[in-house]
Amino acid sequence: MHPLLRVNGLRRSFDGVFAVREVDLEVPRGELRAVIGPNGAGKSTLFNLIGGQLRPDGGEVVYDGDRIDRWPSHRRARAGIGVVFQGARVFRGMTVLENVMVGAHGVTRSGFLGAVTRAPRHRREEREILGTARECLARTGLSAWADRAVDALPLGQQRGVQLARALCGRPRLLLLDEPASGLRAAERAELAALVENLRTDGLTVLLVEHDVAFVSRLADRVTVLDLGQVIAEGTPTQVRADERVIAAYLGAEVSA
Amino acid sequence: MRTTALVLAAAAAALALPVVLDGRQLGIYVLAGLAAMVTVGLALLMGFAGQISLGQASFYAIGAYTAGLLTVNGVPPLLGLAAAPVLAAGFAAVVGIGLLRLRGHYLAFATLAMQLILLSVLAQSEWAGGAIGLQGIPRLSVGGIELDEDVHYAYLVLAGLTGTLLVARNLVASRVGRGLRALATSEVAAGASGVPVGRYRLGVFALSAAFAGLAGGIYAFYLGYLGPGSFPVLLSVEYVVMAVVGGLGTVSGGVVGAVAIVLLVQVLNDIGTRPGMPSYAPSVLSYAVYGLLLVIAVLYLPRGLVPALSRRDRS
Image (cartoon, rainbow over all chains, first blue to last red; front, side, top):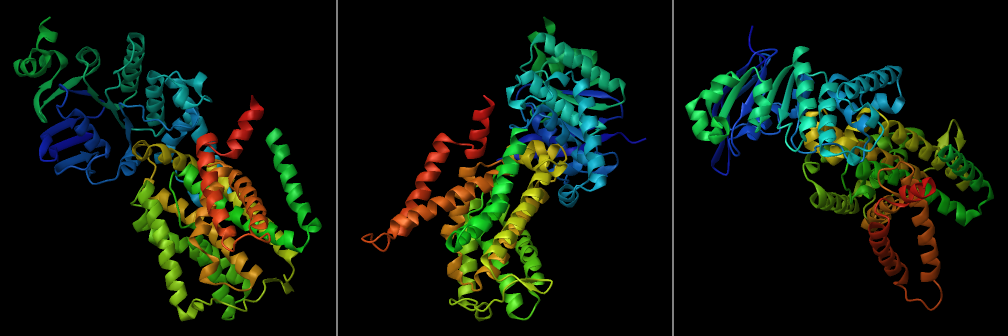
């Protein structure tokens, strides 16, 4: 069976400077893959190329057998790619529950006409969306905040809202961009447990991360980027022992 | 509970007013209702989808001309009225494909330019009556009954406004409405959540145009004549002021803003046309007051009258 995600010779530059060059990557179904690298390694660019926030200059992104690198992001979401951004990309002015309900967009279809006429099918779908959203909030431990304005939540919880929102679209591939950054130790542990849990349920996860310790405990395999290129790939233990990785990035952190 | 009571009271007042108002006041009632229909659409566009239109009067004009031209050429008036929002929405959808690639100020200026172009095309088109405009538009008749009194039009406008408000309310509380509010704060996150950002922006632009088009259609039958001069750029500015003053991001804000501004303009007109006032007084006064109102609203009531008032009675 083909891998869920395959990236081939992917390239993207900004003002003539390569951010990602000739990156190859294969993520089999059910795997938790981490992509690590020092600042400026091209991690976020790669993330955005897969999620659909950026278009590549060359190369391809194949998801579940479809070439998706020219698809707009909403079409990728519909196909089952859920995204959690690093920044607080929540919908201000809406409640936590409403934020999560937006995530169901990819798996529902009623449009302007159904909404305006309140057709029975539309009302049924609204109830389903509400049910799914509440489940996702429960799963991320945010039920108590459901009716609060999302703006009032601290950063850690806002990231939880993003995760619940992504889950509400019933993804098959979950993209996480530095989900642990800015979190306190207890929040990190909770997040790690939750991601572990999602993987057990069969979700494929691509985790872009700076924090090596966080990744080592979680990931099945690790891909290391440096200067826009893959310099190593393997299990967390293999990667930690790789000399090029140590030279490029880990250095003292690992030997210590 | 309190909101329901307020809405019921407003509805009762709106139903009762046409009976007690005199002729001139009825005219104001009709104009306020039409402005409210346009503003509800604009508040949806600006408040929920985060897009600015400085050319909303174009869609009002297109609705009016559609209804006027069709009936002058023998199409049954009711059909002409039904065509008005459809054509306005269709026009918005077509120009929107290009315009909506723009954001913020650029979009505002592009919609303003759209209106200027439309006005000059109308003024030079013989089929549209040129600069003189269309005259002799028959009155609207429904099932053989001709609507020939102002009070009829007052109720027609009320019905149109009610429909507009229901559509807006249902939309806001739906999947699509949530998608619109989401894309207004973050297009990137909305897209990643599966919201087809481009299609939704176009959809809400067309819907706001449909509201304006319907109001324009009613206006054509109410007045019986139309000219390019009936749809100045100032009218578009007026709608923006109404939407901002009433409160973006609320459905009822459009109505509150429109009624407040129409009443204020009447007062200003009274002052501006007093004996001894220079002839340019009314227009100078209205421009100055629109500017002043916008500044005051943005400084002190950045979310508009409706949210400000409802917050006060909660605390």
